Length: 264
Image 1 (cartoon, rainbow, N blue to C red):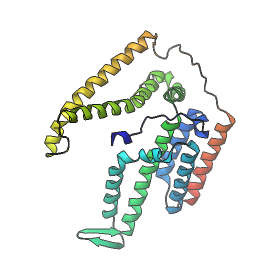
Image 2: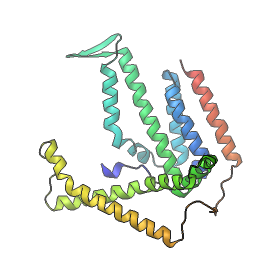
Image 3: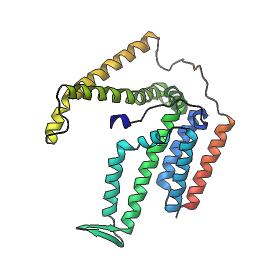
Image 4: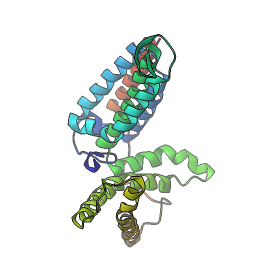
């Protein structure tokens, strides 16, 4: 299960999405997230699914890797599907004991589940095709206008990127600790809920200690390189919009227009 968590991972490549400016990708993902909630009707969601498949193909990230990003939240998707399936009034399609499946329930269950799947997929494609350094530079550039009101744009972007970057590292560390505890005879699967929670204490304590140690090592490494925040810092790679970025933005707006036309 832990190996299936792909959030924060970057897959180096030379695809069309990899070569786009990170600001273009952030803007596109943000716009797509809004569009996913604004869309209505089967035609609009079918169109968005096709767009998602096309984006996954253009990223050249293995399809199984993209699907793996959905596995950690599969239970949430299933739970959401069932909740909406049995809690909406409408024409009854089937009955199971006290549960009734209605046409409206089925419609909302599929729609909400698709929303979650599309949201996770687009978010994963952003991190799959954008390195942490590019994300930091892009977020800092986007937030730079807020410096006038006192927002530390560089520090905020750095904090978000470091947190995203260390998710795979902490997952790997957690997996090692669980395997080490299992080799010492700790049982994480049997017993009631309280017993299972108690069994996770030997896992959480070393995980927190490891996290604090890594944070201290990172702070020491940044100080050793004379890092003093964003004030007066320059960038080796300057972000510039190119023709392909403007073309991508035009395509995104065409997708927005097409979705609204197809919506009920």
